Amino acid sequence: MNRNLIYFLIVVISTILFIGCSDDDDPMGPGNQGSFSISISGAISKNITGFAWFWGGTVEGESGFVLWLSTDDDMDMGNTGESLWFAREGTARPGTGSHIIGNYDESYEEGWNPQHFFAWYSDDTHYFWSNSGSMNVTTSSSNRFAGNFQFSAIGYTSNDWENEVEVTISGEFDAVGGDFSGFVKAFE
Image (tube, rainbow, N blue to C red; front, side, top):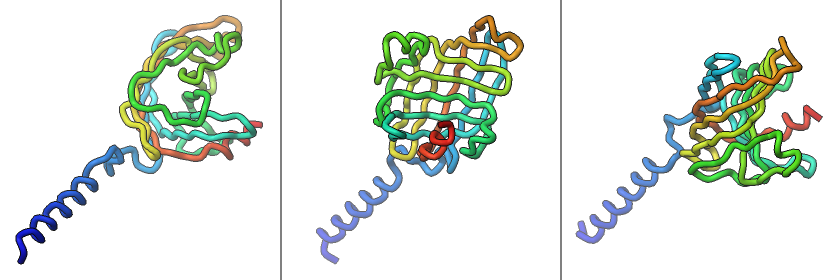
């Protein structure tokens, strides 16, 4: 066999193996429904695990990027379990690196900063929204969005809707791409 042909085959096979074995879409990644784990401390204390999805798109003229962490494995509005939402303006998926989690209360006066995330946590007895913090994105591709976060949040418990309390929410996520447009329309 021609020596150049052997080199050519080695280069082609090595390239195919390199491409197939590289990339951030690791087959050992998040699976079909992603995963997350979070810890809440302060006025309440709990640890939560579940499923993770992300989506960027436009619904009725409003565009945004959403990361949804939920204890329920179905995007069915009738049963959302415990949920932590992250959202930011614009449909572009954020790149890797550090991102600010902004103060949701200040967004009413200052407007949404398209570079900042805002976050909301809810379950049957608690509702919290972001005050300040950061998210570190380690993987950002069309089908996988992963990283970790920590932020302070303020909100209410069902036992006391008049007095705000503060918590710290931290965790990690490995989300898969999804389409929330039908889910978002169900809230309207």
